[in-house]
Length: 459
Image (cartoon, rainbow, N blue to C red):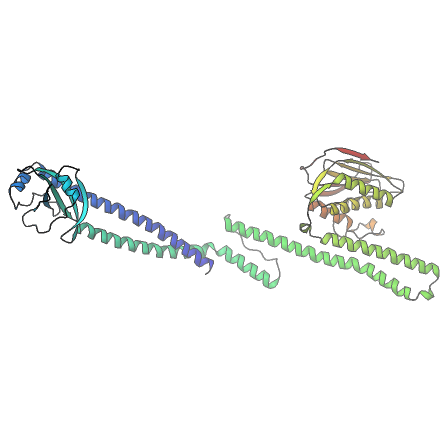
């Protein structure tokens, strides 16, 4: 069963249920009003004969005439019942009224008057039983006024038929209305379905769904378009990444292949040339390792990693110690506040090291590198040539290398990894010119949610 059909059936059921409840209420109200009208007629009949000579003559005559009636009253007749169970009908009345203990109790004045339903002569009737007085021999007498319900039942039958037709019409109208509403309401859904089917068939997420209005389905269409934009951007990024990675890998691989082919002819090489060739192979192997490591880091899915408590100050302190060993010609001055966050320690360690390695690579021999961690922000400042204004917007892009950096070893992935790690922790990274010259790189982690809980300083 399709969703559209289910929606139409649900609308039809809702309308039919509402109409059925309303019809039931109408039927009950009308039935009670008609029965109340019949009871009022019986009361009026009793009031009409209560102060007349009819009751006295009825006691005296074995066959008493019918009581006087208003011209507009329905056909009524009476029956007298004494407390000893004796029954007496009026003249020309052949159908006896059912007599129960409650009827005799009214005659004996043991209970008050009451209304009841019963069958008189095989027909439904409304019966009003009330105390009428005493006979000459001292027996109490109850009088039963009877009003046939044929006209009321006929009216109720017609009303019931009309209401059943109304319920059926409501069901049909609800189904038709539900079909129209579902057809109009599901237009955006059909557009989404068509778009997803075309994208699944072609594999091209550039298509967009037209969005009009501000209802829930329009918001769904807008969300779907946002998802398609993100998917398209992700695929474009993946394509660029694969293309750039292929390009970057091609250069060292070509160089390795060339050097290996030359090395095959090593008997023609003098020892100095052979040593220089082996040094080139080692350097290129290191570059290949760093490049592949960077590619793997960028390709890692952070959602598969588990966040743990990370003491960022200890992590930076260890990275500074490693940098001092790597660049003994430089001075690394560190001022670190005790900072604890929830994150990925391995990725943070890689990002911090990339910042320190970038500063060490660009610093002049004998200069210093300032490393400051405070208020959830890591600042690494060097005293090198700095970053050109045109390059600052691109230094965190993958495989981007400034003109001045192309003669230096590296893959152009170090700072790109820093940005990936920062974004994975809800932070940011930026590059700017340091006061007095040099570059200043800022790594902000979870801004505004964490702060220092202590301080330590190393130099």
